[in-house]
Image (cartoon, rainbow, N blue to C red; front, side):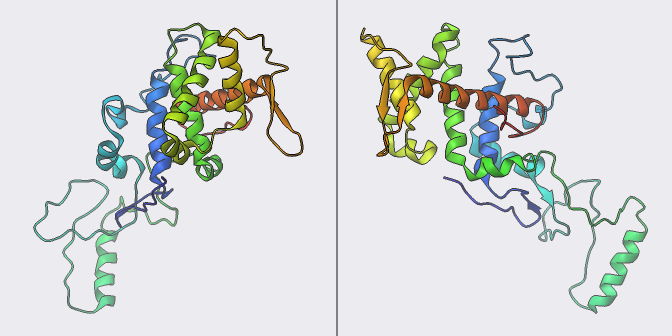
Length: 270
């Protein structure tokens, strides 16, 4: 599912993985709707500084359309000289100057002339620092995120289904989201496995516990269990519920980081 993309030659991406940026886009859409606790700084996801105004109408724009229109401006880093084909309109920008370079002559002389022209522009600042993009994945933390994209997409999918349960009782929201997650995975096994990987034992066991509970069977989270390894290791419904709770907590921590301008940010402590 991950698509490698370095840029177009003039603009390059710091992280050449479109999927990471797509997840940023999708997480932003969900975080903007995480308003059930609006006004409560501990639970509500707050956007207070217009940080993402430059992203435009993310809620009503398909990612592929949005990406093509915005990736250079938001995530691209300029690499230097750009050749503009004859007849094309020269873009207006204060960061570049327009030159005509002959296709004949001595390279050393042309290079000298370019240096002379740049000397006449006091705003030109020689630097060896790499250029920066307007928005970049948070340094360091994005590596684990991008290496485990199936896990990251699992957090995102659970978060989406949990948000869909806002009209329900808070205590029931996770249970309903788990039931919906497993139902989606079973109904679309190939697509689901490509997206989030196989169902983990935590989701399998806790979902089955919820089914039996709904059927009126006398089951307890602490004792309801399934052996899933040859060495006898088991997963209880209680352990499964805690693992799923951590998935959701990580998803919401990433949303909080995003609102503060970092994606994915540090969510390791959850």
